[in-house]
Image 1 (tube, rainbow over the protein chains, first blue to last red):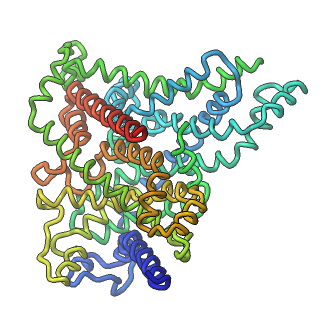
Image 2 (image 1 turned 180 degrees about the horizontal axis):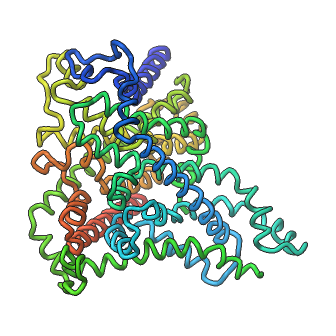
Image 3 (image 1 turned 180 degrees about the vertical axis):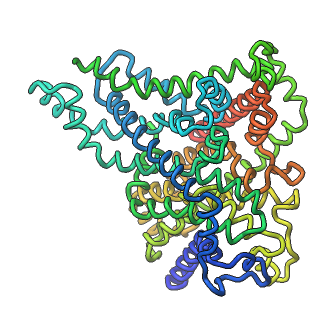
Length: 273
Length: 292
């Protein structure tokens, strides 16, 4: 095949693929500015005839979208901060502190990765019910405060910290907590950013567990609220697209801003052992 | 404080969380699956009875369990190869020296991965609407009769598979791209000097070099796809005629709609066992293939 044709073919396919990947998202954005009922027409319009913010106003003033947005923000931020702290501590301990049974314990943890999270959901619900925590933010935050994946990620990265550095600090009389806070944490900064954005996106997009644990509207996160709205408003495509924009836009923007760290974490996490 | 005590101090919060909210519930799920825990037991624990393997036995005799398993297997068997093929194709295109604006294409192709399943499933529901959806409008332009994508039991699962491929292919694409970039360029150089065509280069260099990555990606994707839930929940509510009811969907309904928590735990454990078996078989086949 001649090179010019090959080049046209490859770039043509890439442009086509990109269109398929991005089109539904652009369509969502466009329809969210249409007037109610406008999208249900033949031929289906691609642009709003008169762009309007009415759908967004309806969502925030009547459907309680502001509340759901804040719930999502609060829950995802809490999960991110807490799990970041816990995973960093545990990952560092597995990588750099010697104690009896370290390797065996770590292998045991990795073994837990084969168990799908859904197996734990039914008893977890009962546990939270007996604790009186069903339908609270804590019900969603607490089980996510530490993850095997996060500990694994930090351990892989922290293994690169030279032992001499830690030994020197110990000889100088620094305590373990101080070593962790003042020497280790600054060195772990790149993996902290990676893990933070990963955790935040996962928490934001999570569906099944919040659906089970949050039984009252006042605690709904955006995905749960959207799923419930979409059953009530089957015909209102414009309103639902505005709801989808509110749900997707924050994570999409976050990803675009911190893309490098996110993709790095994806690769680190997939190269096991 | 010596390092050993510090280690346990650093581990304590994570181990406590994982033990209390993961390990304990998993063990409890096993116990729960051997009881008839239902709405009556939820009201008063004294109504709880031990039924041994009764729940499992009953499930294996329920047509709904087998059909849910069948739908899930359909989703996995068609969805995983299709996803991986699209991911690999996109990675090969992005890795080609002839491709331009690579970072832009890469970001755009990856974008669906970071979106919220529920939100994009809602978008697809409208795009594949029978009457006003753009999918049917485009088909109409080609002279093809409209398809009742999500309302026809034959089409609902294929539509969900298409959606899943669109949503997920970017993830494996990034992993494949990194693996492709790690293949030494002189291998291709040598092949080219020997006059090997691009197709033969792909078969005899690219594919063997991607072997371990392909295996890992396959296993991760298979276990991910076995956990099908949000897509049918939002797009079809398990219908039409229960044609998109997956195993997890069954577990959710059994547990949180009918409050048969014992039987639902048995569903969860059966799914776990099936996933475990499939992964083990894949590893064994790959090992044998590697030795041959």
